[in-house]
Image (cartoon, helix red, strand yellow):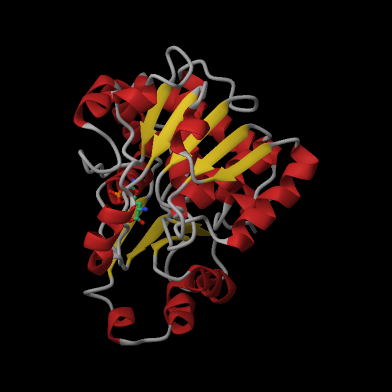
Length: 309
Ligand code: CP
Ligand code: NVA
């Protein structure tokens, strides 16, 4: 059995396999052909944090695959009142077929995986957001970008999205330049893993504090909120310290001609991205959001196939 907790656990070939499954299923879905790849399976969806895209993509996706999804908000289930994660895992293990969870601690996902005996999918943790990356890669591939040799610039907070881009680059072998303000770098342990992986994949990983240097001639520019879920108390301090990191017209002009701009959403205009750049790239950004549905179906079908192998 395999889990989907971070792209570091998945090989390059497996990432490409999942993208192929997603593409095939998307093609069928666009022809209104919904094959029951996960017939009668139940997906438990645990949410300790808010969500629009992750919830809708997994819930609609599971239904279109012939199964059903249960929305389990932390506010409503006993986990939120202190029932241990390992007990929740063992209960779900005897009732459903797969778990997707959005949590604070990555270690909670590992505990769910250890005790449930079910495939567990990371629907975002403080450390990683790998299912979002699958949608981002699918979108870039559809836009004609070579996802194994592109140059990507990530500008902003060194957060779960940065970490996921680092894992993706280091596995697929593309070039990633990360620019964060001083003190907001991606954690050293994640960068160390990426640099280690890069030795095998040939990825070029550059970590710095200069957004213009990162964006210079990049094929893809991406960013994320400066204030992730759980950091709301730090908003004023962060907004002050991220001054100069808004992806605006002047910044995008430094990228390669026809460079793509992605944002996992929700976006905060005037902070990490300007209104005009957001709207100029809205087609790419919403294609990325819509691809959550197809990419997440790919991840679920892959997890199911791995269980049966
Ligand atoms: N990008 C993303 O994960 O969106 P949600 O928080 O709405 O699920
Ligand atoms: N970094 C953001 C991503 C939201 C999808 C957060 O964790 O809130």
